[in-house]
Each structure stands twice: as structure tokens, then as C-alpha cells.
Length: 590
Image (cartoon, rainbow, N blue to C red; front, side):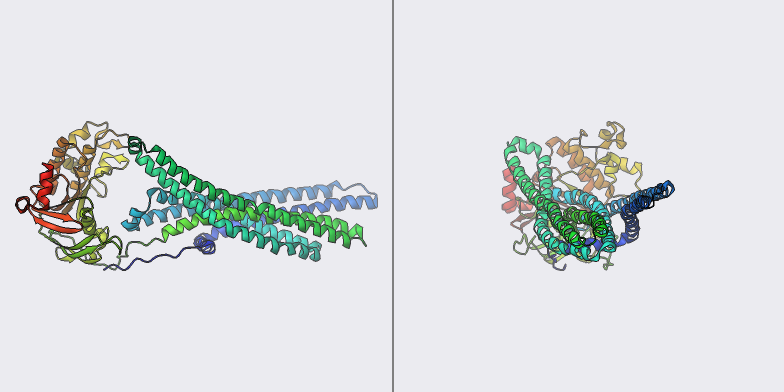
């Protein structure tokens, strides 16, 4: 039996930030190189203003001595400043280039991880989650993470370096004033920390609402005709407005709280500036000539320092958005995978097609059981039909056979081998499947028919299309088998179904499942599809779910299901003679 599903505990800001940093370790070398360039650029930008003192000293010396200003010395300083600023620009460009490349790779790797995750998720998750929400995580959240991370990395590096550099420069002027300046910071950090704590939940709610709105749009777009027919536009709009208001509310509240960071930082910065000027001026009363220029220079560096502290508010807002996006990505990546089967070595290569259900019970949840004590024995090559009212458990039965879900108890055997002892890929390779809803992707007709099959020749594809009775239709299309199928392609539902039957024929699996394959086509097309399916079913064990009982009268075995149980079993003649549930269903159709 499969192990019980584990649940993940909810993540918070700190944990997600830590996890994001850990994930960046694989990019540590380019990030460090970008960090070095950012530090170099910022240090040079800090040194630049200090170099201007040299020109002031030359002018002061000229005034004191009465000699002309040395233009040679001024030119040297000007050239050195030009070199400093050019190098600062070059380093800044290089760090932006490197970090942009890193974040692009991060985005690429997360998309790859999410795409791989989708292939490893159990069907249960995809059944209970809207496609729009999954799509939003793969596109919107990854894009947002990439964009904000690019800005955050660059800004954090530049801000930290500038803060450290400006503090060092302030210390060279006055350690007392520096301590005074730094004393204001803890108070402002506490206040901004409180704001961050309250605003983070709104940024998370914003991303969740964005996923909900994408899911809703995907639903109403795919069901646009139904909405028009039933005049459901107003209801759809009401639901959209409700989600849109939630998105507006969370976005508005998050941005309002985040917007407080900048003015709060300026407020505390101005308090610090006033204190520095007051204390500096008091200290300079005894020696104005020395202390006043020092205070003025100190204030300029304090302004630089405070500007970067205020930049922290912008970074924190960006960082919150980054963490909110990463949390949704991590939530998806943390979803329980299908059970790892790398340890399973048993294989079924040559299959006869004998299938047995032994005391199988199943429920999608522990509270609600769907199938009860199923016992079925199917011989190789038999054609088995499954009938019953909607919700009886017909599709669930074949989903268990394909291992889309795992049984709660009991066994399903193929040629005497428990399918749970086999890898899912091995089990699914044994079946071909034709569904009620035809699935064709954007690609050539040839690629659609050969989907999942490698090294297939054109002759093999043409042969199965002739058997399916669709070769003439394909050859009448522009470019024939090389015609690209798109949403605008003019194929009827029946013609699409014949293409999927040709795909199943080419797959040539020893067993087949047909799930309502003719329920959505007209009677004439049904005859064509039935002929194609008769060729497909020849000498293969097959399970056919059907509502049109006329299509399964020649089945070797008919299973009649009701409320998750098999209530009748036998061929068409035997079940009519029994005059039970099947006979009632059959007579109601004719």
C-alpha cells in the first residue's frame, strides 16, 4: 500500500527568505563577483566628493600665500576625479550585467523546476487546483521573483556598501557625531520592522488573489459559449469583481504600509541631522574655524548615509514582494510528489492482458469512499464494458487501473502481477487510451499522431490513419500530414476523435481504455469511429465506458455499476434476461 500523504507546515517571511538565500548558493560565484564590482563602484563614488577637498586646499593655500592657483594641481585632481567616476560607472555597469544574467538564470531554473514538478504531481492535486492558479505560479510569480530579485540584489549590495563607506568617512571626521547619528537608527529600524510585519501578509494575499483572478479568467474564457448561452455574464462579472476587489484591497493596504517606510526613514533622518548640527555647532563655539567646516562635511556624508537608510524602505518593499512570490513558488514545489519508485525493479514486458481486481476499495478522501469491494476477473483479449449512472464510479475504476490514483485496500493484478509493484511508467505503457475530450496540441497532424512514440516512420503513420479512416481527410488539408493544428483549425469533434484513435493505434499497447469515446459525436460519425475502434480493439483486452449502450452490445462482459459497487455482471443477452438495472437502462434508450 502507498504511504500516507504528508502535509507541509505553512511558511513565514523569515523561513522563505532563508530558503531563497540558500537557493542562491549555486550562483554564489557570479553574485560575489557582482558584489565586488558593486563595492568598487560605491567606494569610488564615496571617495569622489572627498577628493574635492584637494581643490579647496589649493584655493586656501593660494589665498594664504598670495600665489596664483596651480592649474596643474587642479587638473591632476580633475583628471583623477574623471578616472574615479569612469571606473565607478564601469563597475556599476558590470555588476548590473552580471546580476541581471544571474537573475535570468534563476528565473529559467525555477520555471524548469516548476515544469518538472507538474509532471511529478499526483492527479489529486491537479484535480483540486485551478489551472489558472498553477499558470500564475509558473509565469507571474517567477517573473515577479526575477524582476524584484534583480533590483533587490543590486540595491542591497549598493546600499550596504554606501552605508559602510559613509560611516567610515563619518568616523574619520568625528566619532562622537557618528555615534549620535547611529543612535537614531535602532529606533527607526524597530518602527520599520513593525510596518514590514504587518504589510507582508497583504503582499502574500496580493499574490494569492492574482492567482485566483487568473484561475477565474481561465475558467470564463474556456467556458465563454456556455456563459453566453445561460446569460451568466453578470454572475461571472460579480465573481470577478469580488476577486478584483480583494486584489485591490490587499495591494492597496500592502503598498500603503510599504509606502510609510520612505517618509518614516526621512523623518528619523531629519531628526538625526538636526541633532548633529546642534551638537556640532555647540562643540564648535570654541573653535569655529576648525569645527564648522567639519560639521558641514560630516552632514554631507550623513545625508549620503541617511539616503541609503531610506533606500532600505524601498528595498524592503521590493523584498516583501519577492518573498511573497517565492512563497507561492515554494508552496507549489513543496506539494507532495507521487511516491518515488526508483527502488522498484519488476517489469512487465510481454503482456497477455489478464486483469484481476481483488477486493478493491477506494475513496478520494478518508471521509468519502467511492468504490466498494470490487472483484473483477478479465481474460486476455476480452472486451469489457462499464455502464452505470453518472457518479457510479466508472471513470474512477479505470483511473485506478492506470494508477492515476492508488487503491486504499485490495489489489489490481495484470497477468498475476500487482500493478503497485510496477513503476507507473511501466503500467501506463501497457495501455492505450481514447477519451471523450479530445486533446490535440499545436503542432503538425503527424506530430499529434506520433505523440509519445519515438522513431516512427511516415509509412507507419499513414498506415494507421488509413485503418482509422482518416487518411483521405488529412490529405485534403493544406500540406497534408504536415499541416499545423491550431485552435482555428476546422476539424469537427468526430475528426479530432479519429486522430486520437490513430494515435492509440500507433501506440499499439496490449490493452485499451475507451472513456465515452463516441458520446459527443453524431450517429453517422459514431459509425465511422466505431469501425475504427473495432480495428483498434481486435485481440486486445479493453475497457469501454459507455452511455450509448448500442455501442457495447457485443462486449464479452458488461459491468453494471451503482453507487461504487458492481451490481450486475454478464453479457448483453444475459443481463437483458436478468431484467435488472442494465435491462432498465437499455430499454430506456430504445
